[in-house]
Image (cartoon, rainbow over all chains, first blue to last red; front, side, top):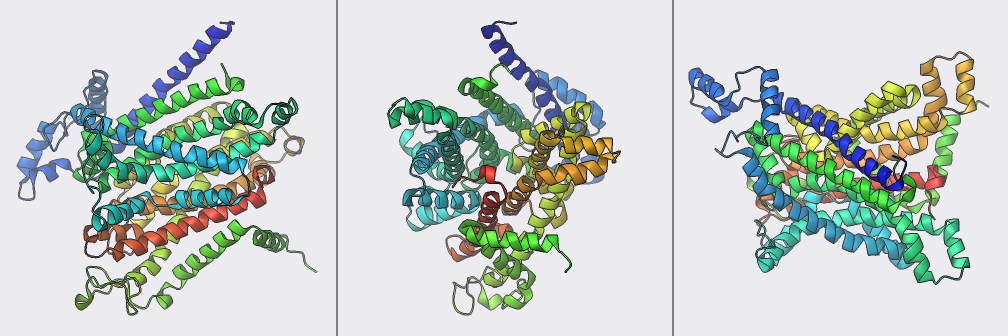
Length: 321
Length: 286
C-alpha cells in the first residue's frame, strides 16, 4: 500500500470503517437512553379509565413485558433487516414515518445551508479583504447578533411580521418545492431563513478570520512578489486554504441544523423529522424516538465523514493520514 | 505591602478590557443582567406570578412596561425574574461542563494510550449527537426541572472542554518543566493541576463564556418546546412557549422575553470575543 492512489483509497476506506463502531455504539446508547425514559406508554395508550388488566395485556401486546436486554437483541436483529418497529401511537411502521419525513428535513437543511453559504461566504470574504472598513464592522456586528439570536424567537418574529401583520406568507405547513416550486418556495422561505440566517453568521465569522490569517502568511507575500494580480492571489492561493476551517464549521453546523429542525419544524408545523421527534417525545412513542434519533445521528456522522473527505481534498497536508 | 497577585491580575484584565470595545460592552450587558437577577425582587414592580383577572393581555403601558399575559401577570416583572433563572442555568451548566471536560481532557492528555483512546471515543460519540437532540433525550430521562436541565446541558457541552484541555496538555506534556516535576517526584495530580492546567486557562476562559451563552440558548429552546422549565416559573423560554398561542392578539408578549434572551446571549458572546482578543494573542486578528 505504498502507492499514492492506493493509500488514498485506504484512507477513505479506513475513515468509512471507523463509522461502523461509532454508529453501533450510538445506536446502543440511544436504545438504552430511550429505555430509561420514565413514563409508561401502555398506561398512556390505555387511557385514564383503563384497569390494571387492560394495561397489562397492552404491555404484553407491545412486547414491553420482556426484559430490556432481550428487547435490545430483538431490536438489533430487526434493525439489521431495516425494520425499526411500529409506532405505538399510530399503526404505522417507524421506517415509513421516517422515510416520509426525512426528505422534508433534508430539503429544509439543504435550502437553509445554501442560504447560509450565499450570505455568509461573500460577507466573510469581503469583510476580510476590506478589513476595518465600515462594511467589515457591519458584517462583524451583524454576525455577532446572528450567533446570539435564539432561532425559535427569530422564527416567531418572522411569523409575526410576514404572516400575522403583512399576511404575505403562510405560517404553517410544507409543500415540496420540487413538485410545486411556487407554493413550495412560499412555504420553505421562512423556515429556511430562520435556520439559514443564524448559520450564515457562523460562516461569515469563520470565513473572515480564516481568510485574514491566510492573507498574512508568507506564501501570499511570495505570490504577490511574483507579480501575480491580487485577484489571482486571492482566488487561487488564499481562498482554497482559507476555506478549510469553513468546511469543518459547515460540517459541524449540520448538527445544529438537525437540532434546529426540531424547533423550526415545530414552529412552522413542517412535517419533518424534527416535528416527528417532538411529537413522539410528547407521546412517549419509544420506537419512533429511537428511529428518529438513530437516523439523525447517522446522517450527522455520515456528513461529518464526508466533510473529512472534502478536507482531504482541500488540504494536501492531511492527506492519507 | 502584601502582594495580591489575583487582584492585580483582575485589575490588569479590567484595564485591558476597557480598551477592547466589544469585550467592554459585553461586560456591561452582563453586569446589567447580573444586577437584574440579583435584585429582581427590588426591580420588578409586581410579583411575577401574581394573577390579576382584570388585567389580562394588556398592551405595554406605563403601568405595565412590557404589557401583561393571559393571566394578567406583569411581563416586565417576569422578564426581570427570568434573568435569575438564566444566570443560574448558565452558571451551573458551564461549571458542570468545565469540571467534566477538564477532568476528561487532563486524564486523556496526561496518561494517553488506553485512557486517551477511551475518553476520545466518548467525546466522539457525544459529538455525534446534535446538541439539542442530546439535551432533549437526557432531560426527558431525568425529568424537567431546573437542576436536571443544567445537568443535561452540562453534558452536552462537555466534549468541547475535553478537547481543548487535551490539546493543551499534549502541547506541554513533553516540555522540560513537566519532566522536571516528574523527576522531582511530584504526584500526578499535582503535576496535572499546577503545572499543566494553567497552560490551558486562556482558551478555557473563552470557552466558558461561549458555553454560558450556549447554555442560556439551549435552556430557552428546551423550555420553549415545553420540555424544559415548566410554567409558571418565569423562564424566558417558557414565557415564549406560552406566548405562542397569543401571537395574533398579544404580539408584545412574544417580544420582551425573546429580547431578553437575545441580549443576554449577545453579552456573553461579546465578552467571550473580547476575552479571546485579550487573553490569546495568537488568535487576535486586528
